[in-house]
Amino acid sequence: MSFPKTYRTALVTGASRGIGAGITRNLAEAGLTVYALARSEAALETVAALPGVRPLACDITRPEQMVEALDGLEIDVLVNNAGAVGSVKPLSEQALSETAETIALNLTAPLQLMQLLLPGMIARQRGHVISLSSSAGHAVFPGTTVYAAAKAALSRAHEVLRYDMAGKNIRFTEIVPGRVATEFYLQAFGGDADKLNETLYSKQRALRPEDVAEAVMMALSMGEHADIARLDLSPTDQAPGGHVFPVPGEAQHS
Ligand SMILES: NC(=O)c1ccc[n+]([C@@H]2O[C@H](COP(=O)([O-])OP(=O)(O)OC[C@H]3O[C@@H](n4cnc5c(N)ncnc54)[C@H](OP(=O)(O)O)[C@@H]3O)[C@@H](O)[C@H]2O)c1
Image (cartoon, rainbow, N blue to C red; front, top):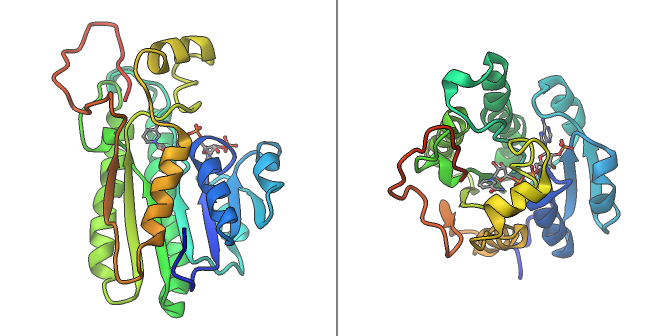
């Protein structure tokens, strides 16, 4: 797969595992220098061993850490991938602190990363921002009020940015995945990986991280005049927003 040859560097947030690790691998194999970002330096070791990958240990909910980590970097491709759903339950049962944390990671951080990196893209007249939103930002999944609100807002931000940045040769792609088999819901399942697999991934075929990474490569490899503005990628077995009645006491997961 070939890129517009002007792209040389990429920054992938949440690169240590799951979807972000898959995207990082693909971008590095395509010959880009990839800055792989996550909080845990140790967890970045596997992707950091790939040729062309530079690890960046940084918490993107801490703007001062982001500014320091990005100092002097020229990034052509920004992949806003890091995200977390937290607990899956009605808003009335969630802690106030969780609301702030979920918004900070899924909405504030991607917006601030764009603020930090867009001026360089505008100056160099090339760039591509790819953000991972979620089917939960476009359809109703019970117990995800704050996460869904953050992802929906990120989606709207992309639409406005495509307008504001038109004519500057910067592309904006929102990838909207349905269920992907990763550790994403591990916290919501109290760290019980077996229960997570049994509940979410054993009865229906979920997407794999490689599927989403492939969609990212497809968006990147379009000719520079073409922008996949939004790409919905769903498991064949999942129809987001279906007619589902809430069962008292039982959370459902996107
Ligand atoms: N899995 C799904 O079913 C699904 C469905 C729709 C959309 N998505 C979206 O796809 C994206 C990737 O999800 P995933 O399933 O690959 O998640 P994951 O397996 O839980 O990986 C999350 C990544 O984000 C990093 N991260 C978390 N908090 C961070 C912070 N404050 N600063 C920097 N990095 C941080 C984690 O590393 P550290 O913990 O080391 O920081 C990890 O590398 C997310 O935006 C998610 O909302 C996922």
